[in-house]
Amino acid sequence: MSEISLTRYLIEEQRNDRIKPDLRLLIEVVARACKSISVAVGKGALGGVLGDAGTGNVQGEAQKKLDVLSNEILLEANAWGGHLAACASEEMDHSQPIPDMYPRGNYLLLFDPLDGSSNIDVNVSVGTIFSVLRCPDDVVQPEDEHFLQPGTAQVAAGYCIYGPSTMLVLTIGNGTHAFTLDREQGSFVMTQPNMRIPEETKEFAVNMSNQRHWEAPMQRYVGDLLAGKEGPRGKDFNMRWIASMVADVHRILTRGGIFIYPWDRKDPGKPGKLRLMYEANPMSLLVEQAGGAASDGRARMLDIAPTQLHQRVPVFLGSKGEVEAAMRYHLEHDAAAA
Ligand code: P6P
Image (cartoon, rainbow, N blue to C red; front, side, top):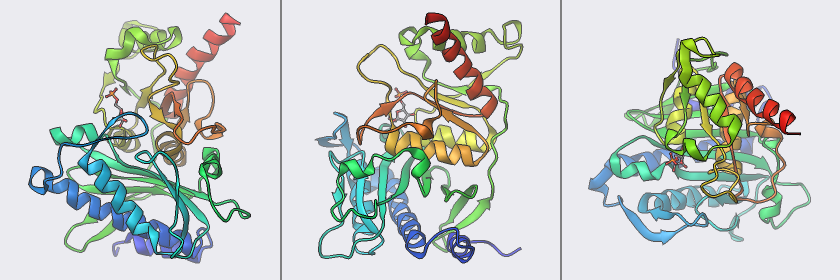
């Protein structure tokens, strides 16, 4: 069977009226920007772009040179095409409208330009996460508030993982599909159509060093995983934690598992570490489209009504049966407390 490129996949989806031409253009432009980011990341120390940029982002985190470079690559790539109304990024305090000199389109693009960038300096896989929303019809000058739409409103979501191979994983609401970058051709080729997450799993991903700071139901849930065969779950579990969300989620989309970044009392005012709009929501759509589930521990992630552009949220996502099990521990705890 001849290879299906990303371009061919998108043209066929457009032909079947599943995406509009300017959304197809937007996804192609983001994919092209990811190829440029892949080149920069791949140069490592030889590219002169490792280490800190000497600046901080809205999260108060030190920015890596590659964070700033990746952000600029995505902004520049999307400025002139006429497919976009505005962008929002983990690396920018506020959303940014498309420059007045260019025509405006109907979509809003949100991204974490280089997630897991603290892993860059130790040569561990990192990635770009993106989410696409419709710009409300009556809005001419998009502001932060126009981005505040629930995850169910996403018309597309995806990530590009810069690992041993560079892969783009995408959903436009019709399944989750993986494309591998053919570096000689410079094109993304479909290599894993219709990814499916097994309903059950024996593998969990969490940063165990925070265990003493978790709330009671999370302690109990993970304690039962660790109890293994002799415990209430009746089976042994394995653990993986890459500390790069894109890499951990990619493993789960490929072979199952549950990824958890829960609330912890280290910084009680923060509802979680990960961001709803450009990390949790796009990953949750990809996971649901692959037959998995995604929650904040108590409710479906994609139903959460956002209140702030950079708001954080607890994240439980992956194998549907395991996410539902983790939710039961939290909901039973709440019911007993009530
Ligand atoms: P910790 C990377 O900084 C990130 O935002 C996610 O990619 C990753 O899952 C998480 O933080 C890792 O957090 O606390 O284990 O370093």
